Length: 92
Image (tube, rainbow, N blue to C red):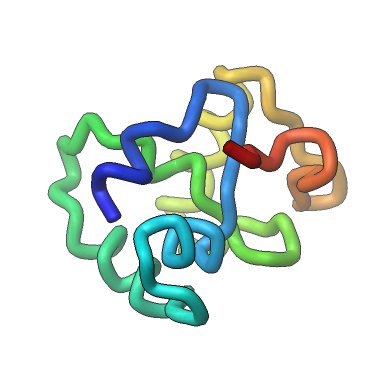
């Protein structure tokens, strides 16, 4: 999954399900989440570009605020707590 994660372009997001499918594990969104949760805190992989299928941040605080801040620095805006998947979703 790390190879797929590294390819997500700046200013784009994917869902946990997208990540799993692109990595060859269709219908394994939870596995994708578990994999991201195990990443070291100082990872350079763009973990913050992965959100849930409703366009929401799934992390508890304070991780959610860190993720939102990183997304906003890349120009991704949240409206009512959601990312517009039609606008920002990466489809390689």
